[in-house]
Every structure is written in structure tokens, then in C-alpha cells.
Length: 146
Image 1 (cartoon, helix red, strand yellow):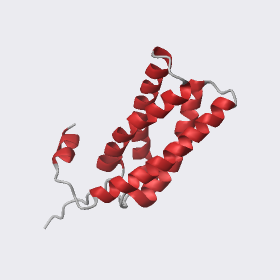
Image 2 (cartoon, helix red, strand yellow; image 1 turned 90 degrees about the vertical axis):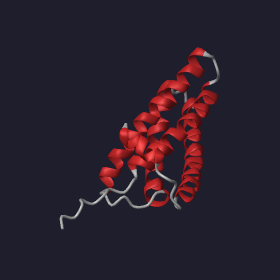
Image 3 (tube, rainbow, N blue to C red; image 1 turned 180 degrees about the horizontal axis):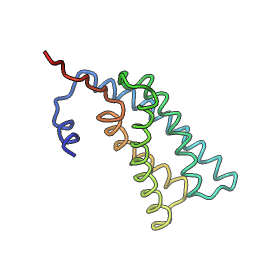
Image 4 (tube, one colour; image 1 turned 135 degrees about the horizontal axis):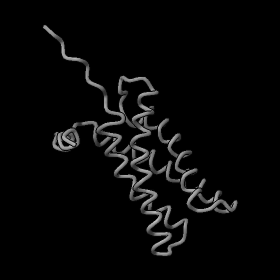
């Protein structure tokens, strides 16, 4: 928790605007991927709750590749460790997305596609912040002992 507070208190760097723009492009294209996959699943008769999970995983793989290659600077870690960190952030994002979907779809009775669209949009800022300050953040080298 202290790390999150420290990260949020840091002054913005010159790359933040570029990262937000690139993340937005990746997120927007990922949004189209997720909604397209979800629509195909619903049209194929897959249950709405199951379809959320399948679309989320496929979209996550798409987003990871683009975020790591283009939106955020190289972390200096192996891609497998970045994927592990990204997956932890994705799990948090999935909880937010799925929770919003469940409330809108089951509790409020909105259509499944509308509920999923809103769920993704609400989870996106949480995902950006967590990816920027943790998942794709460059690791610090050990301090030199001089």
C-alpha cells in the first residue's frame, strides 16, 4: 500500500502523457476485440457469464502483447515475469469488470452486451494505473556498494 501512495505522490514524468495516449489506443482497440468476441459468443449461445471470462482472457493476451511492446517502456525483466505481473493486474481488473457486469446484468436487468461494455469501461482506469505503477514499471538495479 505504501508503494501505491508513493507512486501516486510522485510528480508526473514527461512520458506519462505518451503512455496514456498509447494505452488509450491499445485499450480502445482491445475494447473492440473484447466486445466483438463477446458478441460472437453471445450470438453462438454461450452463457453471458461464461462469455465474459473467455473474452477477457483473449483480450488480455492481445493487450499484454501491445502494452509490453509499445505502450510502456521496457521493464528490463523477462517477458514471463512481465506476464505474471500483468496477469495479477488483469485478475484485479477482472474482479472489477465481472462485479460491474453482475450488478448491471443481474441486479439491474440491463442487457448482457450493455453490461459488459460498461464493465470494461469502468475497469480500464484501474488497469491503467496498476499496469503503469507496477506491472510494466522498470525494475530498479541493486544500489552500488562503493
